[in-house]
Amino acid sequence: QVGDLIHQARQVAKPGPVAYLAIATAFGPRRSELCSIQQQDIHDDPGSPPALMIRAAKRGAWRTMQLPNEVVPILGQHVFRPLALNTMSKIWVNLMEGTIGGQPGTGFHTIRRSLATELLKAGASETAVAKFMGWALGNQWGALPVYDWRTDEDLFPDLWPLHPFLVLWQCEG
Image 1 (cartoon, rainbow, N blue to C red):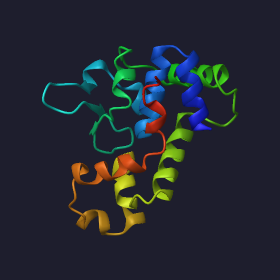
Image 2: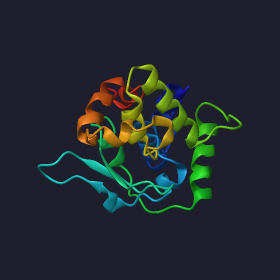
Image 3: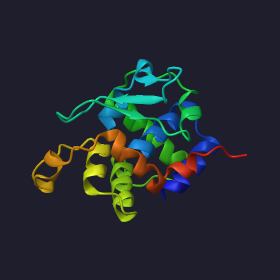
Image 4: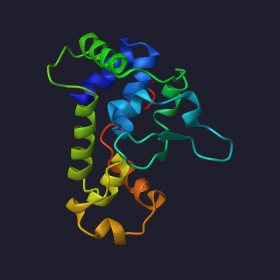
């Protein structure tokens, strides 16, 4: 269903909602994290890969995530500014109603759950998914995250080939 949403949103939605959907499906941020994105959080410096800083919502660390090539052109079509939570909720409702129809009980968090589930089903490690999603690394993973010294740069490149939604953002041509 996420695939249908992406495909139809690319056809009918305005650039702003499509840009938020691209970030939601690429990284699975919380709604409040989407609301806090500002234009200066998107880094496209020459000589460095494009990146997005995500401000953590639940006492987690802010994280800078490399932007996958599939979503970079989509983000360039929108100027980001902080939004109220209810504004993001309206964006979601409008996306859903304008594309695949209203689905009670679904929101941007549904994409977050779907992304985590699909990455794990595809074989990504729990540690990599936890760090990628910005979850606090605590009791449910035991001591492994404490002793796993791999950096985000070590873990995340292995996730991109497993990512279920990125291929849906490739340029249609």
